[in-house]
Image 1 (tube, rainbow, N blue to C red):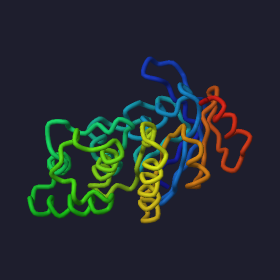
Image 2: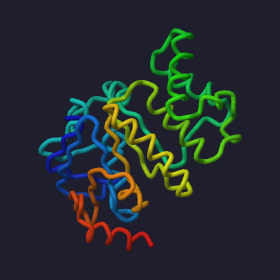
Image 3: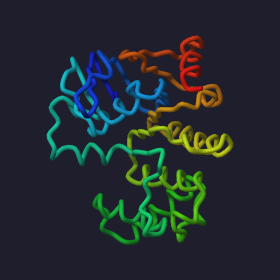
Image 4: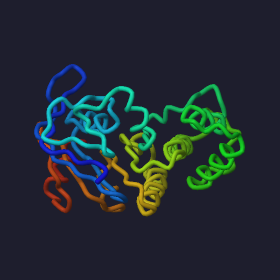
Length: 236
């Protein structure tokens, strides 16, 4: 079990309770959506997974064998090395090329051998269809290309889990579908993917387990069209 939350209470950074008694499990290779209106707690929940937000109260809150209610600060880097994080706004370093963006991450996470770094960068760029973009600067890439590079960055260290916060939010439907194919391929290779989204048509195109944040509650709604339609109405 990669994530195992039992009756976890989740607060925003200002201390205000956003989700109550969350039960949430994720296994290897799972493909999981988190849906809900803006401000319902999706991002807050995701942040607890990589310890951007603390969990103070829970019957159980374990991520990759770390107890998130008592994790020590010195343990957080080791946790995050097992998690790939993808943001809606890409967060690439604007002052360096794609290759140097990826090399920076590898150096920061302990890859000392230059040739090993080069080989790994080539592997992840090929995996996301960006082998010919290594010398490009971020501003020379389209939004979809930047997101593909962000995914390449997320998988550099062979993570067990990908956490993606609205990864297709700024993309057109065709580009979004291309990004989703990459995520599905990642999951099929055994790395779990947990992503929040407002893009409800994706749930039909790329099926997965669906959880919903609503009025402080967190519930699985896989296959419950009525509850998913309610989220679509919220997002219009």
